[in-house]
Length: 395
Image 1: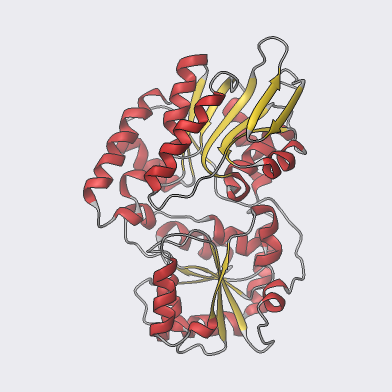
Image 2 (image 1 turned 90 degrees about the horizontal axis):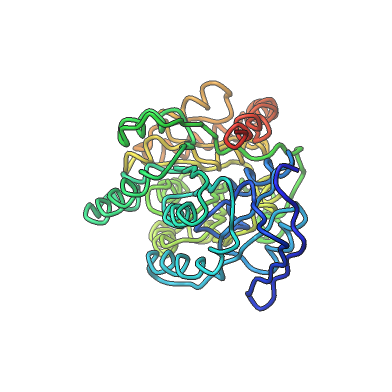
């Protein structure tokens, strides 16, 4: 193993008790202001590193169950207990405060900040222990979708990012278009690595979870949206299209501040009996749920520059489940659709009738798209990026 071994880790009543003889150093410490059991990107990178012999710890929102699950992969979790706040900034502030108790034990050679809000903790740990910081810029934080109509708050976040990236040694982005923009935005020559939001390879599974759990008639087509519930994610346009796609049932896996809007819009268009809010499921269980749907929805609306460049993980999760996708024809997404033919891309400004017609086409030609998804799954998987991930910390 590249890092030194650890004697024991016990977690009791949310307190960490480490028995570490001498100063032990992790190879990599991930920091993520997310619930770890739903953070696909962090989990996939951490497991890839451990598989190749690196010692890994994670500071993230989590609990005893999460710690036990990660220990099976030889990953040490330093859990921050989740407290639910109406305001996102309160949750972030709570993470900063609670993560301080790990500052004397989360010693590592590399600190990977898994989002902008984790960067402050990574900078603090680097100041204490040295090492290098890798910043995983999952989004264009200087042009966030939810802040498209809140310019003052957007300016504050942009300034926050520019302040902390001065301490960053290397960047990770989800696509080449993001790299091009951020190199110019940050005015930096520091190295970038593109790690796409791909799921691990999984065999096709025959699943009926959604149909059975929600008593969905066999004659209905199940549309699935999975991810955080935010404006600009294309949920409302699809809800409107259900008026013209009467055999469709939309199952929404996820939570977020846009939930009330979804309920109100489904009532407004009289399709609330065919819009099901399923809540969130742990990432490791997601594949079976996704596989029980007929069509995936990744209909991003270009409400911000960040969304215009989006290449969401849900698109690849639908492909891994071997179901076709309805997507918006934004540059990065359309490039994947054109190359692999795993769905249909249409304008995010399409009418509800146009969206309904596209959904119908996906159903009619489903076998064609399923076969394409099967072929694409052999290439669009996280394992295909293993060498690039290892190169981040190989020095």
